Length: 450
Image 1 (tube, one colour):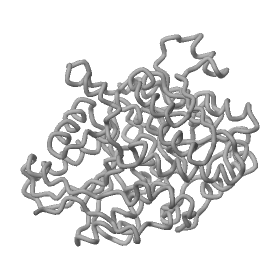
Image 2: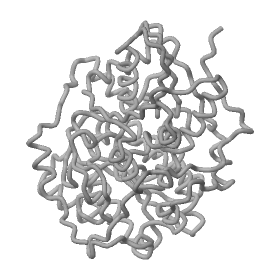
Image 3: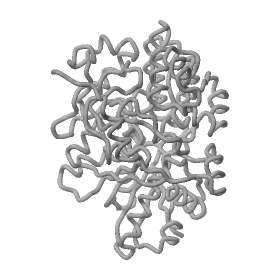
Image 4: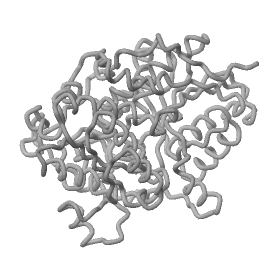
């Protein structure tokens, strides 16, 4: 019988996070205070984040211990399985070995729960009573709703309107965990009201939802802000994915030739790929491949510059690949990939040529997701289908070439079935962002004088 599941024994649970910033040549540029153009200090950031997370955000330590309270909750689903996709391999008629790390086993059904539990813990430690956040496709909102209730914290979620309409059962999941959800832009904040007045039919964007969550945060003394991707501490928390995967592959005497993850804000890719960076720096022949949609091609066509993370320009300036903070992406059904900026950590890996990136069309990714469901049995989230499509491309480019491919199946698509319904009905279309739209979107980036 072929071994499909490679389960890490519970006594080998990961107890430290890996901070890739310690190993990136030339480091990561610091966030800047937009008022001064100088690196922003924890005093200002402390208005929206607890100090425990800010220490991680600014840390250059290679290893950071994971508190026992987080590990206790993680044991509900961690260690997560590594699975060899033998049925997919047979369907592709490839000699490649394809493995996927399956994060859909978490309570909320995605990798986002890893960081949500950590963020809720550090907020609870500092007496925070309420969290405000945004969510694109809903995975992060579901994850934080779960984590907040585990620590007795209230949660308000601003969900990008297009996904709010497309994915109704993610709202139900958040409600089940006790969170309050509104469509963004909403009438609850100044930014939301202003955008609705100018464009009542806007699909919304993560940049808008972030602005609303930040405005909510600073308007109340009992509230802090939680972000599901992009920032250093979020990528740090997700490193458990790659650290487990390395151990699991060692158990079967294997090692990847290529590691694949989709790139929306960056935490999914960083979580799987970052722990392999030291090996690449040491001369190991391994490729780290990020995948994004052609409708939001941040890494493949964006500018590398300082930019805001939100529309209302409330965030610190982050040095990242960006399509511009005013960018409104098309309403693709991989809502978690509709963000204008890429994590500074991922951007630095691109700068140092430690990773590569490709952009894929929506329909080919849904086709790959359907094939994966029919062979491996798991219906993948639309975001994860981008990684599946890239793995198929790699495995079939030279089908007789023996190689090992590892990708992150970051979540299941059981709450995305309305998207699959539209795909099978022929109602989805491909969309590639025109170059002129990119020029327009990036023409108003901040001018930094340091």
